[in-house]
Length: 102
Image (cartoon, rainbow, N blue to C red; front, top):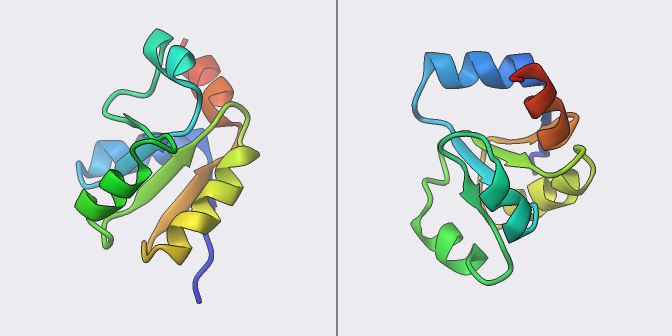
């Protein structure tokens, strides 16, 4: 069984620059997501996770983003259990992303 991989902000920038195949899910609360999020990301919640899993491409890279890179690790493991092959947790979460892109 595979496990998720850690991904730095710089690695995510390169990954999204090199390919438009990357799926990004943001597990922060809806208000935080509405205020600011990584371009192209989806706000993944308990309400829409089943629909996301049903419609997502299980073979494309999937990056999970939270506030600081802690909660995303558990979510990444869960998504692997659901059948995703190439799952990453963004180290430092959205906080690190926003600092690097300020």
